[in-house]
Amino acid sequence: EAERRLQEAEASLPLALDPEEFGALSSPCSPRCGRGGEQGLTSEERLAKKLAALDQMQEDAAVQVSEAHAEHHSALQRASDQRIDQLLWKQVEPDFMCPILHERMREPVLAADGHTYERGAIEKWLQQHSTSPMTGAPLAHRYLTENFALRRLIAAHNVGAPRGPSDDGRLESAEEERSSSAPSCTQRRKQGGADEEEEGFEEADLSEDQEGFE
Image 1 (cartoon, rainbow, N blue to C red):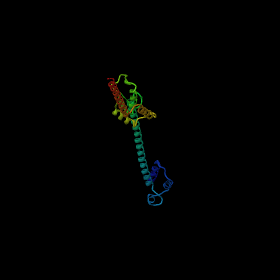
Image 2 (cartoon, rainbow, N blue to C red):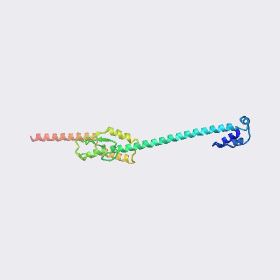
Image 3 (cartoon, rainbow, N blue to C red):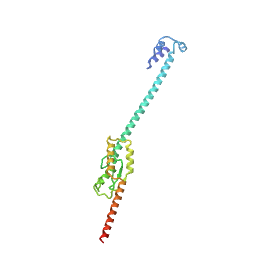
């Protein structure tokens, strides 16, 4: 009766028997001959083996479920972080745009009107205008001040911010245009020196004419 119950319990387990185990199970064998003889394991030992295998399967399944939950949570966290970054970027992106070029600035400078522009764009504007591009009011001066704080923010956000495929090309072309159109400091000094020399020659000529006239 005990052997029959063991066989029924073993058969109810969700593990398939191999042919050797099935043959040993169908042939009558006493516990004593099954433990040390060539007939294989006894029904009790096979049942214990199956139970151990089931326990291992449950542990493996629990580990897989835990890993799947952890991966799912990590994916949700990444998606949430990415969405937050995108929302933050949309909020600060307008502050990084040049009011003249309507493009992200690389070299932001502060003008006399209190607004920040891309250096190349505002220098080109000041060559033809003496008013503010934003308000139209006359500018008190034409000095430009580097906006280092905004420049650092732009550099920090450019690392992970979405960028258009033509951003770099447009900004590089603007910088090339600025460098070609705006005279350098050395050229300005040379030009200033030439103007001073020319004024000196004119003054000398005038003094000589006055002496000859006297």
